[in-house]
Length: 370
Image (tube, rainbow, N blue to C red; front, side, top):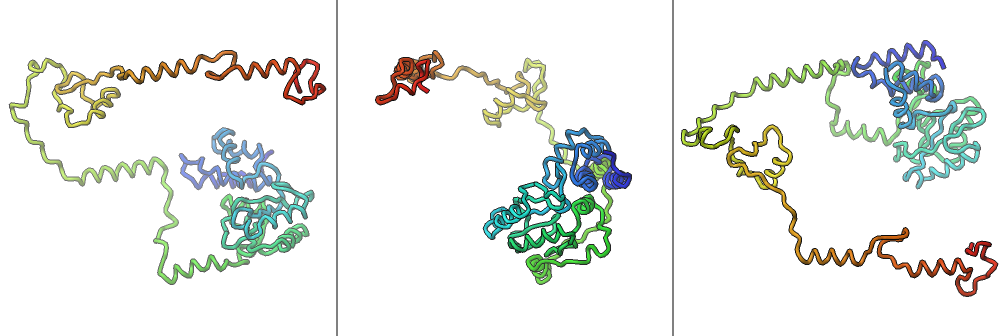
């Protein structure tokens, strides 16, 4: 599919929101953008996103299949989602979903024949205080009952747009995808309708009552590129280093502690003996040395030598007893299993005689019981 010039212009605008070295961060809104034109993320949409971002299709597909908001097959004009998770289920959410499924004749992620409604059950719609809840293109209908849900979908199928309990005026899924891509709803008065929910207002009233507010910030603060951020971090680190006081000079070592090279018989520089370290640390440093590990022939360094673990007499006796009690497996039988019962069952099967009272007619022509 060839995407429209409007979609391509919007894609360029989305990518321009991000620093040049972080353009792949634009993938999520771009997936919403291609969904706004096709109604779902098609293989052509995946290819389009990969092309404009310089990614491969596998990288784009991995993201598109991870999030449930990206649909992988054609979806109706109105996505009706009913929460059937724990809280809403207890309050009647499953009954609402079952009623809609029976009335519309569709199941989970299926679309009605007229292409108007796609039904899905949602794990959680993050509105437990309004449960049971149903959303239409992610706008909420709170405390919904089966008959109220039926009224909503019937109005949608008739061409109407019922008013959500909270939020702005309903729009189609494609129109919602444009908003999710980061573009304003351009319909006249689209955001003037609706109102907030009382539980949400309760939090705002408590914040106002107790003087709780968000610390000030500048929403116009530019986003720096990675190179600019690294440069700023390096400058801040240099300033911090320059502000540190100069370290006091170390006192000179007494003359009697300095040993000439000839006295030690080693070509390694003299280092402090690691006697203050635990044996485990010294062993680890010897087995996996690094730049700060003393060389093996440095003064005071003792290289640990691994030897065979002691084998007590009772341990050897226990091992021998275990070997004797578990002979090697043969003929596909597990080690240690007695073969008597298996041989008896095999003979009974071959002779056609099974348990007492068995009907000879139950055996097939090969003599083996069915």
